[in-house]
Image (cartoon, rainbow, N blue to C red):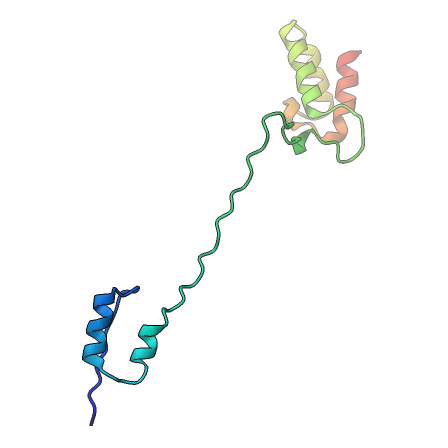
Length: 124
């Protein structure tokens, strides 16, 4: 009964390693064929680089700046800016009165639909 010998080899084999393996294995089936044809190594996936954006390219638009509804009414930022300006010029009572009429303690608590009313009250 033949013996089975398993070898773990690091490829590629040097010519000396091939000679030694042929001497040990002799004419064992598959050995000479395996040594004659080098095993094809699987191709490594090629790395691709993402191109760097050009220096003169415009920065991407901020989605918060986009007007998705299509309205041109005042925004929360407009209301905060106007209220801040009035408070800094000594008209805090006018701002507080407008907020109280709309049921808010702070400008940030205003509902979107109340911003035009708030702005109109401050500008009158």
